[in-house]
Image (tube, rainbow, N blue to C red; front, side, top):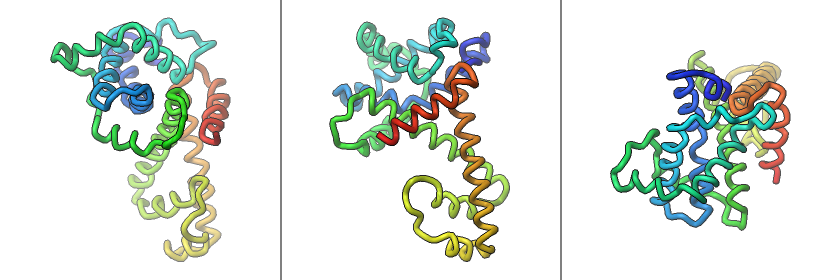
Length: 225
């Protein structure tokens, strides 16, 4: 986020686009929760990004209130309230979408959202938190694959999270052909590296390193609620 806010030219644009690519789905889910159709949500989300990327919005984001999550949602609400009609230029062919969004996949994901009365804001924050978790896990998967340990990742992944694993540690160790103590050592390192990557992902969305721990606590409470 600092690169997007404080960088110049191509570097700032690329940083902003990276943030938008990573976190567009929570915005889509928010718009859908407002009662918009899938087609309208797609166009409005695209229109919002066109609006966002065409302006130097992050310059006004202070370090005291430097959470990209909060900034992005506030900017989207303002866009929907006061400028949403500009998004229809995309639908009419009057603009080029700044990002390629997989609308079909987004709608499939949205249909899996809880069928309850959660507010659009709550849905946004939950999807934001889950997106951070997914991105950290994807990076960890890539690290294991690069080291030729894809099978080990697949087994360790089953022990990550709140759900009970499908097998005991002893059974998982036997599946991998290693001692149980060795498996436990791999699992400890897996969890530690996962948390490190999660902290890195969060750090990209806040203004200062001091904000990371607080943001993690907030997102944990969102998922727990």
